[in-house]
Length: 310
Image (cartoon, rainbow, N blue to C red; front, side):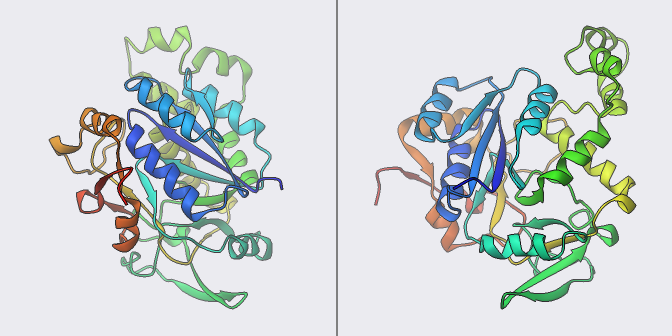
């Protein structure tokens, strides 16, 4: 059976948290449907990551050397119908019938931008209009991101548990990035010119002007901004059924974009890597029993247990 979804996950310095992402994804979605790719920035804890990758040997691991180039090469080779992005601090705690998701894309191809796995009617509280509808007897919901009244609902392109048509993602990425071959060579994130100019003026501003994202955060934010500025060219609706995934933010590994998180010495990347070596894992059963009710949560959902405990 051919895969239907390419799941692209980004990770850096979080082996214990990536383990929880992969384990929870495997628990709630069939591996026959999803091929997972991990774009892995090698920095700390290489031994722990190697242990993890041996356990999840069905994942295809790309060791990051040039984020922009690595991502584009992967995207070019993807031929599945859908793409699902993931960040290593996301955890799944429930499932949605994938047949229903595919039926939505098949029935409403001109209006559906993506199917979110992290929205619910209770989460959308900013006065946005939510429409209820039915597909194959199941109740679903949708809202227009173009009319979104909050940062949550006016943010169509995200790397946190939304399923998109692959063709749409490729169109957005190709629209954001300069396709001029000379520009590509001179102004890529790893070019000699950028390294020199970066000592004089902001390399970030240069890269942004050409759409050359250089991290997961800039991939998300710059492409999302393009969508917001070119909304007339894109489908308007985000579909959802219930929240089944949440980002459990207990530490930070990338500071290119401001994020709120629980800043605790108990959960630094060093402490958690040590816990991983000791055999501790994130307690997915605990999260499933006390399901988060928001797109992001903190230490209240971060419960560790020894992997050989019953």
